[in-house]
Length: 430
Image (cartoon, rainbow, N blue to C red; front, top):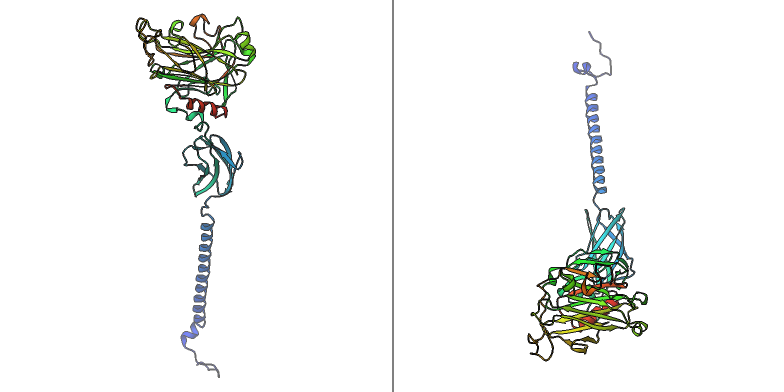
């Protein structure tokens, strides 16, 4: 028999058997709540960390802080200049300009803060502020630059804008003798290149010359103009006992008889002409398809009076009016022909008066160069072999010792305004 202790409450059998069960349950609940609380904190921390990671990896758009031109505050139309763009987030950027006549090349990105490149502008770009667009994978930014447009010279922005649609051949002589408009590759022998009127120029020498295939447009000529700059220092002038020096010829395959379809050469000056820094210039054409028995070959004579410097000469023939004109430095000069001396010569296909001779004399009219020996070769700086007996073989005699630059051939007769435009713009190096 159990003896009850005074002051001690009676206990149930379960209480005696599991005296700490409630405490254990409470502890278990408390522990679980504590674990859940810790897990919640950890989860929240993970969310915060993940959020921070996402925030730190958000792509940053490019920005531009400055744009600098190598040319200075502005760039002039018709030129090129380097540029430097500074900013942020420029990695792998491209740079473009949507304005016609402005191209961007040589773009280099250094790190994420610097872009360099080159801007090239055609002469027709007007004065104003233009935009460069900087594009990365993360967005775009813009930079601006200022252009100073060219003033018109003789009504033209550059030599290139003078009757460009009528141009059939153009030789820049920038390190080669290629026809950049007729798309013909020339072959040079002994030619070197010096600073010219615009870029480089052809420098002649004894035995030096160039030959170029004649583009198909030459055979279709009815009117024409030849424009060229040349320099002939005293030491390079033909002298007594030497041969005339060829500048430019258009020739068929039979060079001995039809090699002067277009002719331009400097002849030997007299003692007085030599002293006065002058030289005779022979120029003209051979209308090989004219009526049988008619006068077809016209080689005319003029005198240049400033040949130690760069001189611009242009010869034009207008088939519609049968008018031939020769220009020096923008002005028509006297031409000596079978019909007298004049600054504007009307050509006929026989002796005057009209209707005389056999066949009857008429105006020369449009040229016919399609037959019997159409143009096949352009000779630069020398004579076609066998023509007039000057050079028996190509380059053996009659080579031009001066310099030649900016040779252009047109399928129209240029106006005096056109010629002035070529002279003024060429004088300005454009």
